[in-house]
Image 1 (cartoon, rainbow, N blue to C red):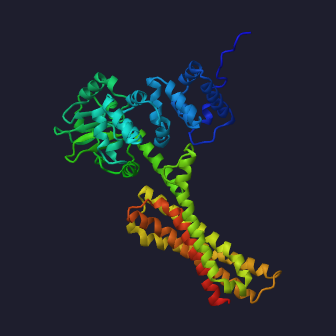
Image 2 (tube, rainbow, N blue to C red):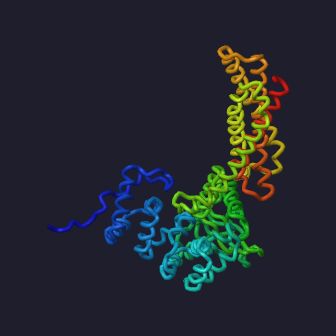
Image 3 (cartoon, rainbow, N blue to C red):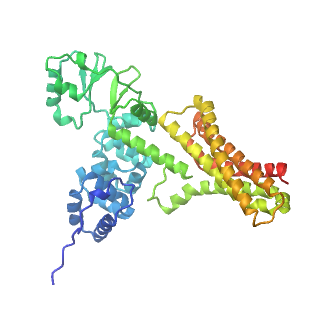
Length: 473
């Protein structure tokens, strides 16, 4: 009886791999499970043969969905060209993947990265490991320069490879130079035009180079509506610039205005993706760097502070309710309104805060807009609150037909007034807190977590009982 050579029975189904964050289809899950089985069995050649046929997005998705132990094993099998795919992974996941990897293997991996990607990966490694690896990298000097810039700055993500031509050249000279250096140019989005001091004065679109006669001076057809940033500019601000001015490439200049690098569309997409992931985590009450594959110990360490903060807030809310024990004893029906006002206040506050955070992220909302934003939100909250209050009044009047309570009409009107009031206050808090946090240098996405939910719970319960004491009890 002959042993059967293990095979990968399925090819990755590309239609179901639009993004690595999607749930795997049943077919792709079978592929991942088969890869995991073969990696565990040590079927190196079979796995590598299948991996070589996979497009880069599918390889990224495979790494993300494999068990971390199997993904690390696969990393140890890949050769230099294939290791390049690791640069496409989320930085936190990439750091976990390279954790405990031998120094020489780390050098092999990072030598396959672009300098800016290698610098980013080194920042995610322990300092003692980075100190051993850095001196032995081929692009050591360039990587050291990039690491000298601030974290999450334009300089830390820029590519030092760019195409620049003198302003006094002709189109023929430019195209000849590009052809002569074709092997060194990986992707060409635009051609920078610089003066004698290496300062950018414009750029050439590819269509202009193709359509203009060879003898045309560059100065006549170059575009001058470019926007450049400094190396210390925050990467999120760079992404806003690119989105606002519809830029595909952002030039980076030093203090003297000389061109030193560019930020490519790939880096811009990565920045936007990372910032969106961080905001989503913070809005969910999680640490900004949370990811699905974290070890249990790190999950506990990252989440427990937020859970304890929520517990503290819930305890304060319970204390507020307890402070009105006498009022509850007089009218037990009031207890049934507590979850209503807390839920409505929380929803209204989160809605307003989410819109504010989105506006701050896109640059369409600033601290100067605070008064206008609050006015607009309060008018909308007044309308929405009035509608919700009217519905609550009708529900209370209907319920009092079956439940005996004192002064049902006054109870219904007071309940409606309370709901309207807590919605107005919740929207005021939700719309203003993110802008104020941004003003003092705190990520506004944190506002949609514990700050808004806990704060609105306490305020809404206290306001509800105060209005009930004033108009009903």
